[in-house]
Length: 406
Ligand code: FAD
Ligand code: PYC
Image 1 (cartoon, rainbow, N blue to C red):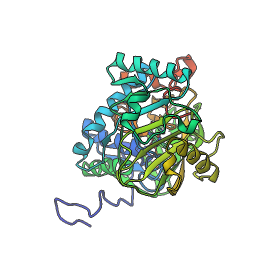
Image 2: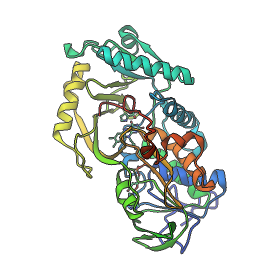
Image 3: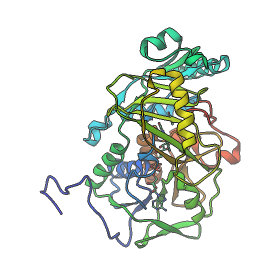
Image 4: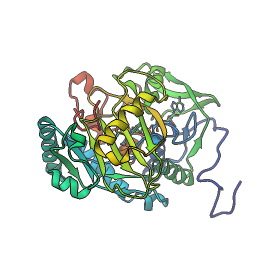
C-alpha cells in the first residue's frame, strides 16, 4: 500500500512477505548489525538485491534490549580505533538516516573504588590518548561537579577514589537505530522479511549456495550471520566452531523523573551502571548472569542486587519504582572482542561475539561487514577480530573495558 510516490509506505519500510527465488546476498538477523550491513551494501557498493531475514520483528533481539551506551574508551589500540570509528559515524547518523535517533552526548564516568581499579583507568586513559580519543583520569571533586547527587562514599560501602572520564560517551534511542537503517535500506531496494526464520544453510563443496527458511528455499552465494545470542545455532548449520558462549544480561528502567542525571555512570566494583533516558527513566544494568543460558527471562535476584547498589550511590532514590526489567542473550568471546569477517566456508560471513558491547559498534560493523561481503576481503580495521585469532593465540583482550564486571 503506497500513500504517494514520495511516501511509498505508511510505515518505515515495505511489508515484504514472499521472498524471491534468489538474492545476491542474504542477511540473517534484523537487528542493528544486519540492517546496517544491508544499508551499507546498498549505499557503498550498489548491491541492492539483498534479503534481510528476521525470525521475529526488527530490533526485537539485543538491539531493542540494550542500555544504549556508545563510547570508545577501550583498552587495546585495535579496540579503541574500531569503536572510535563507530562513535564518529553515530554523531552524524540521525542526519544520514533522516531520523531522530536521540543521540545525546553525556560524558561517561567509569568509577574506580580501589587502587587496582585506578591503575586500570590510568592504563585505559593512556591508550585512549595515544590513539587520539578523549579520555582522562579525574578525581572525586570533578566527579561531584558533574554529578552532585552522587554520594562519593557510596553510603560508606565503597568510597570512590576517581574515575576514567570519557567526554564523547553517549546514549541513543536503540530501536530507532534499527528502524533508521531498515527505512533507508528498504528505500534503496533491500527487502526485509520479518517472521521469517532461517532453518538451514545449504553448503556444497565448501561454498554457500542457499538458505532454507520458514518461507521456503532461497538461492544465494553470500550469507551474513548477524544474530548475536543465536550465533551458535547458525554456526552449527555450517559446521563451524567458535568459542562463543551465551549468558543472559539483564537490565531495567525506573519510573520517569524530571531530568537530573546528565552523565553516564558505571561502577565496575559495585557492578552497576546508570544513565537517564530522553524519556526521564533511569536506565540501569549490572553484570552478566554467571551461568550459560539461552533465555531472555529476567529475575528478582537481579533487581534486588542492582537497586541496593544504586541506592548506595544515590540514597535519595530509595522510593523510586522500577517499572520494567528484561534480559538479552549475550554472545561472549573469551577475549571480550567481537568475531568479524570471513569463515572457512566460502560465502559465509560472520558478525558475532558482541556480548555486552555491540550496540555502539552498529554503524562500523555494518560498514565493514558490507565491505567484507562485497569484496570478499576484510578491511584492516576488523582484521584483529578475525575468527582464526583463537587458533593463532592472537587475542584482542578487552575484558577490562568491555563494560561492567563480568
Ligand atoms: P540482535 O539485535 O540480537 O539481532 C539479531 C537478530 O537475529 C534478532 O532479532 C533475532 O531474532 C534474529 N535471528 C536469530 N536467529 C535467527 C534465524 N535463525 N533466522 C532469522 N533471524 C534470526 N552494547 C553496547 O554497546 N552498549 C550498551 O549499553 C549495551 N547494553 C546492553 C544491555 C543489555 C541488557 C544487553 C542484553 C546487551 C547490551 N549491549 C550493549 C550489547 C548489544 O545489545 C548487542 O551487542 C547488539 O545489540 C547486537 O546487535 P545485533 O544486531 O548483532 O543482534
Ligand atoms: O558497552 O558500555 C557498554 C555497556 C554498558 C552496559 C552494557 N554494555
